Image 1: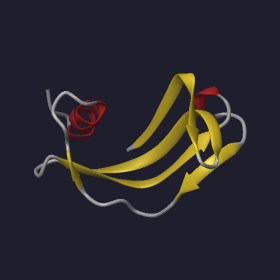
Image 2: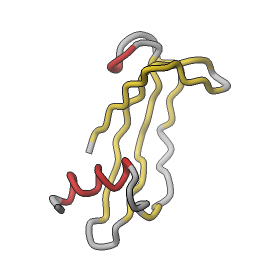
Image 3: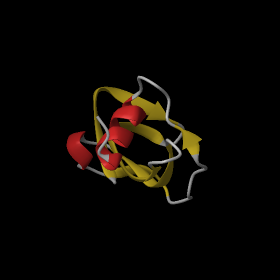
Image 4: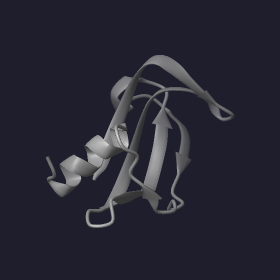
Length: 81
């Protein structure tokens, strides 16, 4: 599933500042876990502007934290209520 985060305030990393990030995640519906496949941060809102940082290294599987945004994404991806 592709996700887009749009921030109200500037986020800062070593590479610079960004206002949005976009990534692709994979979900294990039965195991209630997720992993990042790719991600990038953009200088503008809604995935616009220059790419400030990018990461195409597949992340490790992580458990879905209760009450987190990740749990909302997992529920959407896995069609859970």
